[in-house]
Image (cartoon, rainbow, N blue to C red; front, side, top):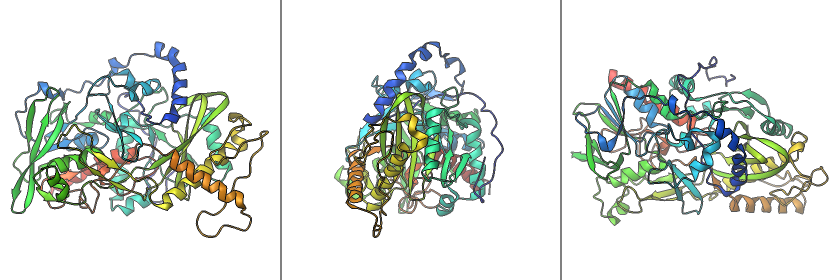
Length: 563
């Protein structure tokens, strides 16, 4: 695969040690046009093999209600998600590890394990432990929080793409270790996807309208158009972060399922709180305590995600003092940054009815533009969908507790498009999508009377004029009043159709809550390793980097302990 100059080039990955499967979540109403078409694949669901027989026989999985803790642990990892699974697996090589996951396993549930069932998985309201826990932000945007071993990798669109070398340098990571950690993940969960007609048309359309150069198939983040990776294999099976537990030492790791953390056990040493363990409840509501070993280096590590980690810190008395006091939570550490910097990359999409049937596909191709918008696509039945996601973003909000109940979803606001630059990027991204729709490469997949987000229309197979006014600064003389109307229409479209692409992050950011080693500032024996630490979302889609971070920090911690 190709790489930027300071990224190692890796040979073709080995075949994963075992097939894994999961599904996609799509809480945006516009996607339902595509999702409905997937039901046409019902005949496939009748002949698809049952993958239950291929479930991993992890000997260390336990239902929390049927397990009595009889020992202490070197590390307690809270959250068996995209970061927590690789982190726990790595730490178990040398130490005794307890991993607490509030949900169940992805295996054996065909709503999760088959691509064509992902809409069912999204809409599953069958019980308190359904994998996708819906919430609505204060912005009014429907979103979801994972509640399953493997975390968001069991629910997302599957696209796999690394962070750029610039991002790695900006956050101060060890580039050599990063380049060792990504392929550790990829050997198990990443695949080079095959393109069919709709994805090829979008790829060629992006190149035709100037999103160049063409970088072929690569996991690396490079300006231009590329085929990325996918955690779906080419038979439609999803491979998740839970599969990375296959790297674990089965003799030194315990994974407890349906174990909901209540709070961190903290004791004060001088004026600093120190973590000693975790109180959690099982599915029957019975409370348990897991304790760390009383040795230097033992830690509680939070990997509960951008909602769960700041929520658990606050429930434990670590956070903004005034907010904690308002809920009668004893303040153990006044840390105002907890819950701050909450961001969700705004996504806007455009559904295009097609004159001909299209393949069922998720994200495989991406256009990485120089102006900070990523253009991706999906398809199914008789509809295609193009979307753009804004880099960053610069806009952010905050998270607060709704109550002292750990089961109560926190109050979160992302403040989409509060910063003008984010809106500018959306406008440019939607213009790029319009250009792709009007390109020669895409002609077979559009109707002549297709309307466009800007208010224009494809007529007679031709193309409306696309306004290329500069977004910042003075527009060129050739721009007419049409251009101003075009921009205003696209701004309205961006604001009115904003959706999530489930890339929310922040709430326990580096520099605000944790230091460069991801240790909670002002506390001892307590770290955070997950997307809540990000100030800026990495790459086009963060899951590759979140999994990498779990492995990366696991190795870093092992090295610390070996000194």
